[in-house]
Amino acid sequence: MADKANESVVLSTRVRLARNLKDLPFPNMQSADQAQQVIDRTALALSRSDMKNDFALTYLRANSESENIALIEDHLISPDLVKASQRAAVFINKEKTISIMVGEEDDIRIQAIMNGRSLNEALDLANKADDSIAENETYAFHDTLGYLTACPSNTGTGMRASLMLHLPALTVTHQIEQIGRAVSRLGLTIRGFYGEGSQASGSIYQLSNQVTLGFSENDIVKMLNDTADQIIEREMKARYSIYNSNKTKFGDKLMRSFGMLKYAMSIDSKELYKFWSDLRLAISLGIQTEITNETADKLLSLQPAELSRLAGKAMTPEERDIYRAQCVKNILNEQLP
Image (cartoon, rainbow, N blue to C red; front, side, top):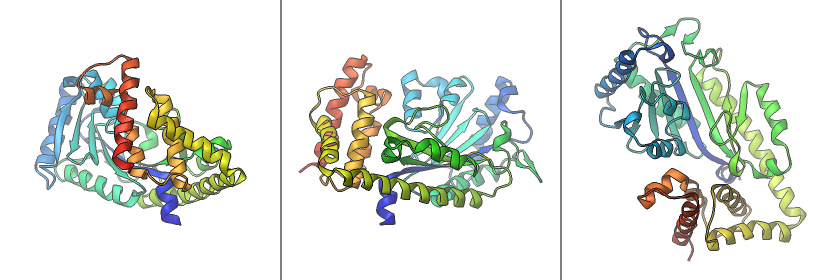
């Protein structure tokens, strides 16, 4: 039952490590030459490590706007890295499970991204990349404070870990605000799909640690896991409570969204998230048995930049919505008998 609940609620895991080189100022005080030094030295460190063949380097200034937006949509880079695109770069491994952002708020931000609930595995992956750089470079580190970062809230382990959670029942029952207040007392926060300042599209929330100083990496992972257990339990109870109160009416609502995914001729981004959320909920309650979670989650990739890439051309919003509906049908038809 616990595995089913995890699969129903936890979409993905991310662990991010913030690091700065000892002999250079933070990025906001760097010259253009110093910013390039960070990129070159990170590339050299990786090339001398066991991971030397794993990464491809991309300069953001060499990308088109849509290519950079696509990287944001895939959670491989942050919007802030794009703002610094003239001096920024990213190293991404072949599997797209690790991205190393260079030139954002800190010199180096290592991200490990994995499907499902995989905090320990993601931490191991991030630490492997971190060690590969640390073997050849010296980080800014204080014996008492830990890793030194541009923002004091990241000082310490420099680690931010997060779980992406699908919480439709807690959203509709207006419990999210209460949960947000409760987790903040533990040094955690719950935010929208793309992190700080973003909205919870499709009832997707990011649960992450807010403080790193005074906690070990294992402390943070345990705190997140323990809190996630409680949130998942509340979400599953709320789902079945809503469903059992009127199975026909609630089931009909969810399956109408599935019908829209199958037959609508145009679907905008907001509708996609709503219909996806209802489909995911129908799968978890056993109402929809023809579609798997894995297939449903492919729908979330159909964001503006990705659609333009798939179509091989720029599109108007109206053309994009029509094309999105076609892509949704293609994805679902691969699963449907």
